[in-house]
Length: 113
Image (cartoon, rainbow, N blue to C red; front, side, top):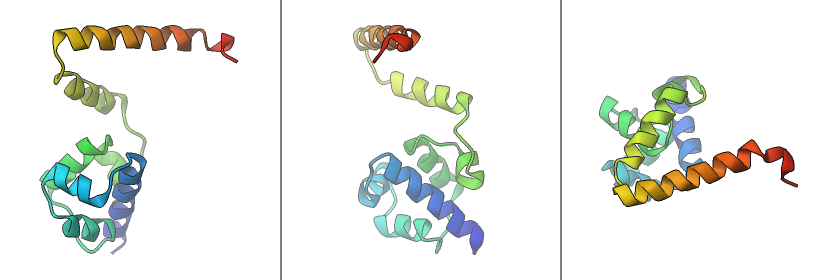
């Protein structure tokens, strides 16, 4: 069906964008590589739980999977919070310094050649 193929294409495109193989993504979300191949080719649809884990690991929203929309700001912030929760206070301080540096660079992007 068209729906299955569209979902599969969106998942494959996001997986490739993230630089993941089918095997590595399947392992991350605890499904078989064969099942992931079937999802990507439109032969099978993922369960709601699998769809949720795919969206998280591929840094995309479920809307993006179904409707090919861009990731929302809220979803991006949720992913950032999820990622940051894994770091210690010292590591978070370093990440904050990096963010400040990036902000300064982007704030002065007119000066970058």
